[in-house]
Length: 268
Image (cartoon, rainbow, N blue to C red; front, side, top):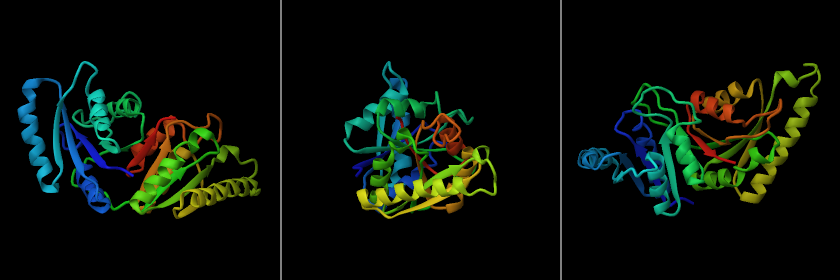
């Protein structure tokens, strides 16, 4: 599926946290790994190149140093990703600032927009020694909208590439339960998510399971993904705008913040 994994770094320990996991993924899939540093001035390139080479050496990754043009760092990352067809960009949601940035307005989102393709985003931990486990499950939250389901083909292809299982999930919010003793919400959601799981398995030839979660989507989805211990979320940034909204931009941002797993994000 992918021919190269590209990890942008900015000189901070935060931005480096994905390297070990990306290297593990590269080895498991036989995919080349490249580290990218984008500098703003030409006189920064020599030092940045030495930094990258030292960082890349333990994993055998390619080191790439590029100077940002007038369009900025995000555009430079997008240009490098497009230079090699089939590049998967994997990056941390924040770096040198050390302060958590909202998904919207961040460099990572700008890269997502510049690429026009999904990327893997991860919120780094203050514990910079953290290494992510091998990804064995792709958690796919759906809410019945076409927008939330737009990521399905790419999520299924990602699962096949990783040798992972897709877990389709839907969320029943407390606010839509008329009477807690009436199981109609569960029945309806179970029917929907079970049907979608079967369709994905048949159409994309990947193993698929399903779950119906209860609670607020912003809490239920990241809690479930985190509990698995070997998962990656796959999400579109927008879905339903009503009560059953599971994959709205705010939910995506909350999952990125709380799930402690990588998020494969697609713009609608």
